[in-house]
Image (cartoon, rainbow over all chains, first blue to last red; front, side, top):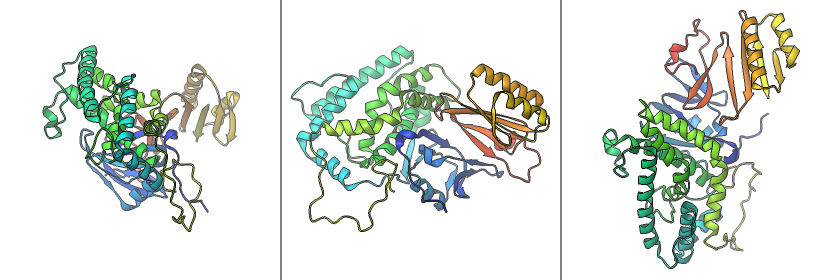
Length: 303
Length: 107
């Protein structure tokens, strides 16, 4: 008899796979995509950080359950990789981590320290002293706009500013489309990592008010090193299918920088900058009657 | 790391593969050789394949950590999904394993 299926750690996985069309189901316990002609493709669900489902895919209940047991995030994305919706959470969201994250976000002093650490990582230097989160955000906005301009110039693409209007996707310029595709890839793996580490995607420090605020915070720490310069380079080359080139680029960059090994330690590092301790359970709290089984997955994975 | 698996090939080729690699199961050969030697061995597999089929997998610096290629007819054909190489399995009753059926085509 086989033992129950358990998730493996994020750092051991490949970053992502995009599934374009077909019925996603379970055959003999394996995660498969079956197209209309009966050709089936096995997806090694447990060794992928996130599976990006594009329009034209259908997922069976059984397949979603298998992805969850393997600790793999299913992300529903739009045609061009623009984010629509996500579910199939791999994380078990540990209460101690959630309370820690919420405590840091609610304590103004700790939150400022976390935000300062995020800027330090992004720009390679400490931000100016005695600034509020609001002021830091203003400084950051200006720097980011300049950075976009500089990187666009280096790659030789025309740049009229970041356009987030997903409703007018086809009208936006190639550089913006490449950037949106690349960030969608980055958000997918960052969300998978945030959940696997046991944190809440919605509780952000710089970003706020969105279901993925914390994911955007974390993705921003990697965005300008990892993907923006490459996305501009692809935009400059006028490929017939820039989105595909962007995905190939993301896979390459993620592999070379070993980003899946870095995301969770980086999350811990920025949160530790808040200088609060992970809360201990109150003495009157009772432990689970059935103790958690040992797992080789990350702390937030359901085991 | 280099692994070659052959099915339905003449004994001549199996003997040849055993010159460089260890046959750990029937038709499963393992070794650790350079890219140049790997290409030389693969070209010999190509020459001696006849009606059989073969697959070769070796470790390299792709995101999966390995790459593979195939020769001869088989229900399983490699497909590439935006840089990640996986395998598609064609239905049994299909006599013609035409790759054009898949729409994506084998990588």
